[in-house]
Image 1 (cartoon, rainbow, N blue to C red):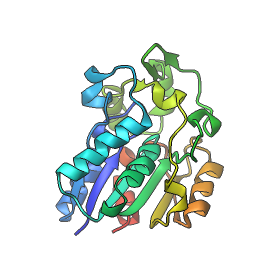
Image 2: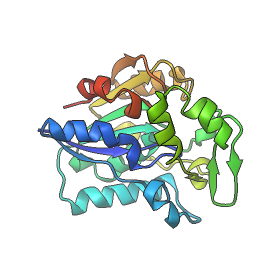
Image 3: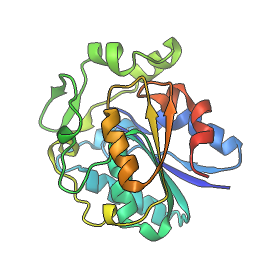
Image 4: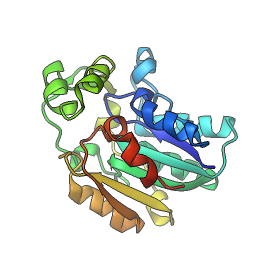
Length: 228
């Protein structure tokens, strides 16, 4: 059986993985789907200084303290950045990587270098889509029940994840067993970005007829595509 650790994306929390993680557990796998620092059920901890690197350190600490080995790290959206840094930090505990409609930046890149997001609401600590944008774009492709459920839970994302360049001095020079899943109905991140990830990691590439929140809407289809 496989041990999965999930990293959600922007405006999400560990809740985005709920149906997928529960299904994996029913199949006998182990699945951890925490909310990243400052997000989801940890949104009250939002503060200055939360970055891709600090979120990755948090996730790596979870893996260490739970004594997990041969981990499959799975990320979606900006969670792909956290997966890259977490993998760099705890290389010896990682079996493989999976990127689902995910951003994977090169060392020194900012998310704005690869993803042009629509107008967002920002303050000193966070960035988020407006309620209208969340309804009409972010969650638009979800079935009605799942859309309402997600809209009740979406939350601002720590702004330094967007403002700061990622620090990945060792990740891209290493060999990884990796899988990229392109969700064809999502404009972000661009397919060109996801193909770049595929080429640089010599990863398996799958196409899924789903939107950006496929972890919530297409968990049945995603299950067999995840690395085992």
